[in-house]
Image: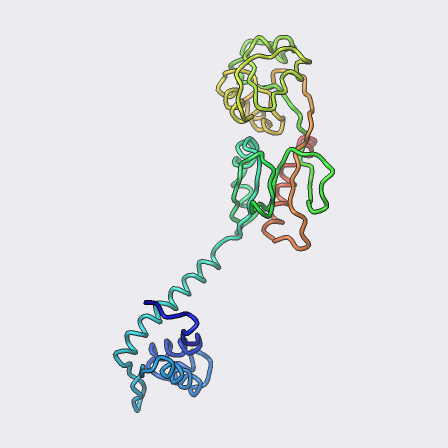
Length: 296
C-alpha cells in the first residue's frame, strides 16, 4: 500500500536526513548542505515527528541510525538517486525538431544530407515525418514543413520559397546507351515511360498519349528509372545529385515548370526555439535549389 503523496514529508527534511544518515554527523551534514547545524537537526526532528519514530541515536560524538532509520535511509537514498538520474537524462536529452516533408523529398534531399544537417545543428535531434498530407503544426507536433503549395499564406505562417517544380525526363545511362542525346520528344515514347501520382507526362508530351507503368509515389518511379526500367519525369531538384554523379542522365532537352512550387513553412512565432531556428536557417540556405543552380 503506497503512502498518500500529499502526506509525504517535506523534501528539505528528507534531504537533511539523507545527508545526516550518510555522514552520521549533523555538523558534517550542515557543511555539505550549506546550512547551519541547528537547521539540520531541526529538519531531522521534524521528520521524526512526522513519521512518529526516531531515526537516529544521538551519541556524544555523532549519530547512529536506528534499525528503522537504516531501512528508511536506504529507500530515501534510492529515491534521490532515481531523481538525480532522471534529471541527468533530461539535461542530456537533445532538443527535438520535427520536420514534415513529402516522401520523395525525404529520400532524395533530406536523408542523403542528414549528416551535414546534424553537423550544422549540434545538439538537435531531428524527427522526420514523410507525408504529403497538409500538417496542422499544433495538432501534429510539427515544427517545420516542406510542401508543394502556393501563396498567399495565412498571417499565422512563415513561408520561404525553396525551388520551382521544374520537371526533367531522366533515365539510367544504360537504357539509352548508343542513342544520340538529347532525344526528340517523339522518340521518348520508344521507351517505357514511368508515371507517378502527379502524372505530368501528357503535359510534357503536349497532350500525346503516354503509356507505361504507374506508381503512387515519385520516389518509386525514380527507383524504377535508376534500375533501368524506363524514363521518369521528376523535379530537377530531386535528381540533381544523381545527374551530377552520372547515375541518371537527362534524356530530353525539354523542361516544363508546373505549379505549385516547393516552400519551407512553419508557424509564425514571436520567439521561435533556437533549435527550430537552426534547422530552419540550414534548410532555407541548403535547399534553395534555384540559388545553388545559379552558382558557377
